[in-house]
Image 1: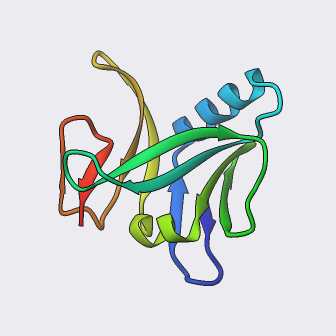
Image 2 (image 1 turned 180 degrees about the vertical axis):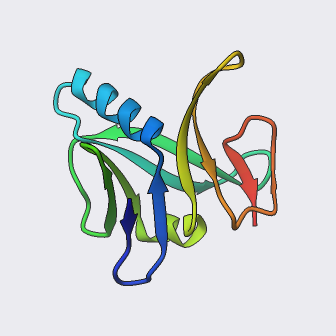
Length: 115
């Protein structure tokens, strides 16, 4: 679980996401966290970007749970406040999914949304 003390915006990790992030980071030398950011573009206007990183930036908010860390920069947090990051493993495949209450539309790929 995590919250940004400055803005009060909160992003949560599910158990499944925390376990998967911890497992991925453990296998990658020099990587300590999963960075999630929001970028312009994508078929619905904005898209999520996922990167493994070794360092934390000054404007990052850390969301931590069960040994897993997700870093989100302050600008991306504006678009992601109230979101839940989950990891899904089903017949369609494995993926991180973000349930974002701010999104009014999203596309089939699950990584693009509009506000």
